[in-house]
Image (cartoon, rainbow, N blue to C red; front, side, top):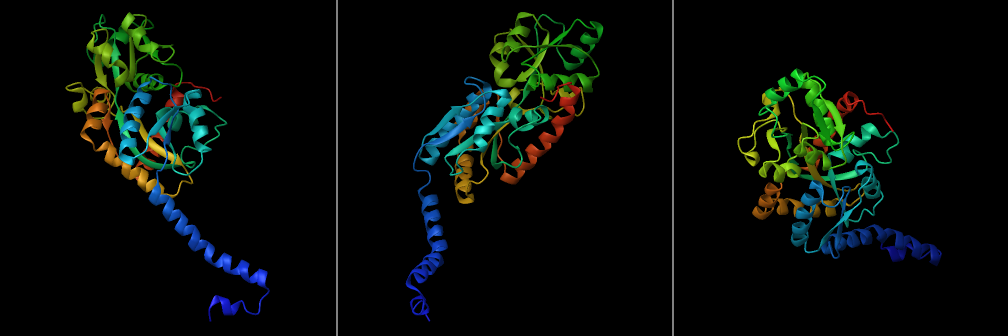
Length: 334
């Protein structure tokens, strides 16, 4: 018996409503399929919780430009810096989950801020859909060239011999450079006075001799190292990388030391999976392009991609790692 016969004895209005309800799921499925098929049909926004011109912003823009070409629609970077990346992530959490908002996520807002800010309005592990990492950036231990320091061992011995006179510069309390330095001092069992600066001023302070050493993202120190204004001593990834030639790792002197930066793409949590899959496929194709690898390498970053599950696990492990480091740094929860 068809639906029309079943409705014969029913009140007309009720019958019509029943039939409409019966076909609604199929109609929704068809609309969803059409939306995925036509996606994207307008520009996509990439939220950047970092300031314009920062190393993370530079890497994100390189990826956004080429990802737009792969997807067939422009990917527009929208900088929303503030509070260590927290402002941008708050905006990202509340964005429409339709696939037209992506988030360029990195260390500060995802794995450091949650340990520092007591009333964080987003949960880094629950409020976002994970697509993939796209870059890993080694931090580089640099010193003023006038110092008799050419290795991690030299730095440790120098600071011990000059107790209280050697200054460690950072980009501010809670920054990567601050926590990377705290971790090195703790694991290397030496002390050095922390001198916070604002952002990139920490590297120029070391170059000028105002401070003695610092640990900063490779892209932010490359030009000064090439110009001879800074001496690169070691990098912070667990193993040597062709990206930095023969530069040794900190871990070769301080076993277990590992402190690299990273960037990856997220989307608002409720973004439909078929659209997430399409975005991720576009990202993987983008990151496999030789010109993208070359462009990121020139900025001191390595291309790294993984599955959504692997990306989630990676961030989860990074999140757990930073809790103890924040405590060691004596940072107060705000």
